[in-house]
Length: 125
Image (cartoon, rainbow, N blue to C red; front, side):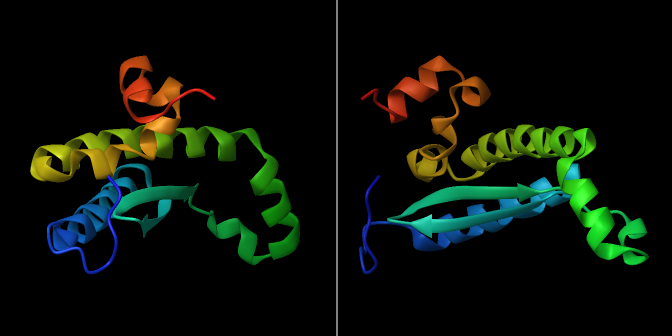
């Protein structure tokens, strides 16, 4: 799963296409924005941001602080992670040859992907 730029044996275009597919899928089905990056030939899912309501325009700083700490923000973020899981597994069906590169970072969350996948990609210290 470790690749460097210039590695001609790896399909970089498929990785980029899968990343965009996953980002758009998460946006479409949860309205959340996904931040991801490529690192050493695998996708790293960094953050999921829930959408913001139109109310914050009136008193932006006050509503912004409220929104980040309310229960709905946390629930919506959890929904985004669940949709991300589904998006990754759908991407694996489209690009099965980069399965390990798509799953390696998502497998860090054992509760999200299950024990079997977690143990395959992550080792206990």
